[in-house]
Image (cartoon, rainbow, N blue to C red; front, side, top):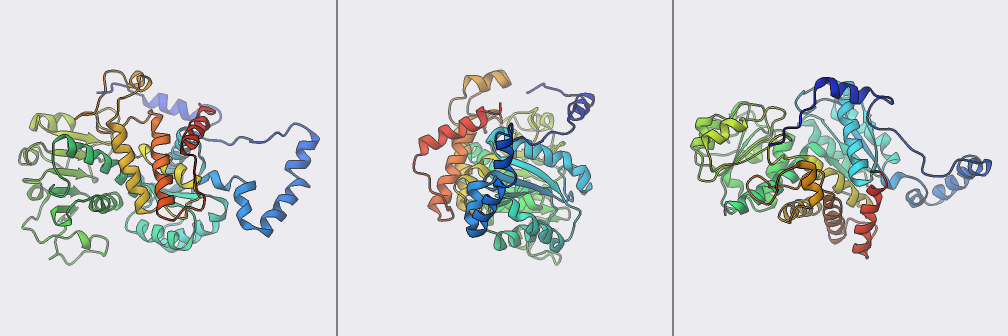
Length: 427
């Protein structure tokens, strides 16, 4: 296990060091002489305004729109903290913007909005959308997040992704496919139990079905127990996952199951339940910072288990950092109108396959020890620079193939080299 520990004092000092926070801006063109000022500001900028007024598409040629992502939240569902509001959510959004820039060369800044109803949120974001090439929705609670994302996708022509839903689903799916491969189980036959029925759980279940899971083999549990067809309190989001199987509690549902995916709360899964799962169980305790069952308890209950968490101090961290920077990178570079299912599935496969390759020496140096594909290495590590070219290329190609791209890349080797050069300039 990774023993790296950072104290509260170190975290506070890191963020408070001048300039406070984690992101800023930088100038991309010379501004040293009177000629530069004339060119960049007045009257030069008027030339650019006229060009864009005559042809809106030129905004991508002459401004930063094509490489600019808004990380937007109203702070109603911040991971591990809940509805802490837009101000307390700001450190998370800054971190997302920081990661987009550092790992994928995507310019981003955070926008925290004081709006809670879907109508208010949609109105604010639509008004801001002309500034950006893509929108990364973040930490917006369910079920409102579904309506917000779907409405914005229908009304805007730029890539939009609710990271909590889709990036989490993509990384969890890649890890699960590799885990099933290791234990020689077929996703179509696997019995899968979800603890949690929020945005990330719903998105993960939908993605697994798209990748071959049998809907009849999925049981989903919320705070009231198993989502059953005979319940009279199901909303349209949960209803498609209702079962008529004779199970009522999480403990009932887990018996004989192959896979447990927890996207709920800490310490909900009992050791006794784990003992009653099928041979070679796969358990993803993704509640953060406290998983649904502890590493110690799960290993004591089932030595044959494959275990993953959302934490970085245990093997197999399911971290959406492996997906969202590179999905936006690929989508922006082909000017995709949306981030669709084909692009998401391409990201899953790219992440899954990269984990099966030999781990580079520089990555092993970052993390220490030996790493190779297996029960304790289902996913690439976040510091693996190969993710940029691998995932971004897969997403861009899928966008082109599925007909949602407005730019077409022909030289894929050149594009891969260009991607690495972008982040090399900022490291």
